[in-house]
Image (cartoon, rainbow, N blue to C red):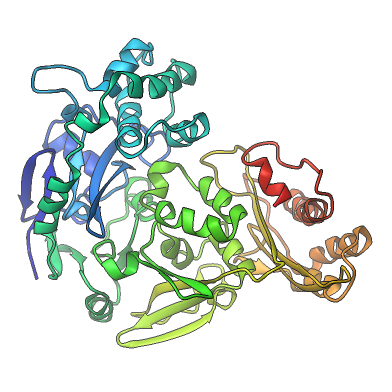
Length: 490
């Protein structure tokens, strides 16, 4: 084991022997390093005031990502490069083009949120050439401003490309930095901690499997987009944390010909394009999971293993017919994803067993897939109801196959077996769909909470089934008020 955390803070290599396993990047920056440009706002990954940029190896290439420092644990930076707003000013005091654009476009008033906006814009500037307005909106959706208004900030996002030379940017030397981070990469288990508590980060799947057998009470952390809140909001003290982010095999997507094997450590951002190529509506659903900072950290495997009844990816994966690969020690097993969820807070996972991959079948010819997320706002909100549907009609317009799955309607993500039975083998008509809508009442017994009442959830779920019928029966129907309206006609 290696007992020293290693990462770059800007250009400076940092090596730390003792670190609290759940110390956040934000607290370390502000309290230990006195780099107070990074702000604390919500402490739950919503407001973006704490946004920093992390450079990490993606294979052998360097990738820069905007992330929330408030819920990211410091020890997860092993082998990475951390950039804060203090790093942007040049050695001669000149502002970075991102900063200068914010000044020129009057993108700041009180200034509290400004460092976070600047860092989100920096990640966009470093990664993409001339994004369109929709892409800029997506990149900034995780940064909240209460006084300036977004128009001048969006204008700054366009302006930074006009006044900056990306090729000559001082952060553009990716090859050299990839070499530096590669030099930090090893096959050892990272083991650091403080006060009798430990942070363990294996480098291989066998190491992870053994650590989980040896530490049955450990908390598994992938993106920490949920576990981070256990610490910042609920003040939970975690004795042993096992981090999966250094396991390269878990961050791979393998094309099997008829399916994609998506490693449990693949982030939403990593998976979005590959999944959207197969199921465009699924890609649109991923675009609405958290904000860009959250999607850069959160993983599909973590969303499944968490077992939340309102997780957004399980309903879509279940509708697609996905299977799950679980591992315990040297043994693996596969099961349909819908069978993994037993009841609220309980999954079919033995002690020491972990999610290794999710197998996503490619759609057969003629398959129509739709996914709908209902929430109080478009960006950065938790679902009240999330519905996903996979429909296949035969040559005479009868339902040859249908899978209907909902999240938010029960203690687990769950298929609507009664509604499916009503439709299977019948002509795809408004009458048959209306009868299936009635059958949904027997498939779910939703709860009332602050997001929605039980009655509202039941009504919405039934209406989403009718929306599926309208979108698949009337090519001219315009059912999308926001997002990509073209998906309704796919």
